[in-house]
Image (cartoon, rainbow, N blue to C red):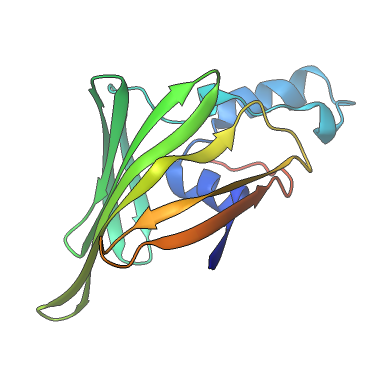
Length: 165
């Protein structure tokens, strides 16, 4: 069994989903607000196809586009050295991952790639979330059809921080 831990804080920074205007609004309008009261909802997850996101990553500038495909959203993040494509859907304010494709250039012309699907939709984020919320998902991950992996994914909201964009 493979155990994976997702840190929400890392995801929020990587995906660019912290909207500093909204969070600033929470802090500026009520300076006595407790972080436990601030809730992160599905509006912080980037499913708006009009968004064109740009990231300054350790592998250089990367660009992300979101496309609606049926009831799902395809989030395509890439630069010259990698791509990372997630297919997700939203149901009852919860984000589920159904497919993941990735490729990274390791050295010159050598690259590593994977295409991952799941036995049932993988629970990414059960919104709304607040400080110390946690969740667990167990399922089967298919990277190689002949050798599926049983996985358990756990997540926990570690806290909130102000990010200036």
